[in-house]
Image 1 (spheres, helix red, strand yellow):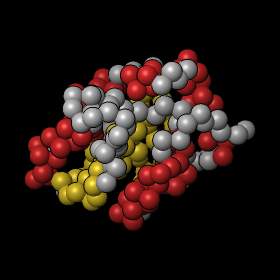
Image 2 (cartoon, rainbow, N blue to C red):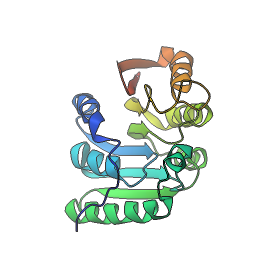
Image 3 (tube, rainbow, N blue to C red):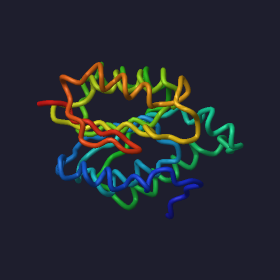
Length: 196
């Protein structure tokens, strides 16, 4: 079974994730907020997740305004995600994928309520400032001490910086939690490690 992806908005950031691998050599649990067709989930599972590990993928699979503006057919995104996760399971049977369909704030809260803690959290869900700050703050509670959170689209060029952009949210998050984190890198993405 082969993978099916219509767009690649992830692999240009692969080196950022490889840098995290040096910090988290044994990653058992990954949370991905915003999975789209699953390209990043496939890559993280293949390259970061340990055997016996689990990746939890949260998405509405309805897309965001940025997808609608470019006329993307969103009706097939979830089916592609499901296909790609089946192909991934076939290729890596010792690694698990948990699919959570719904609004990220609700689904992350469910993970917290179930006492799920993650080694790595990748936040690439809604791109509005409100969506991004909500995802980052709630996800922080689900991140293990010593774990790493990667926040995507810090330098996103599709929109000017403002209420429809992740940058103000990421800046606010860094200011709110500065005493409890270490910034690992800041480029198109921002990675932070939760202090032990």
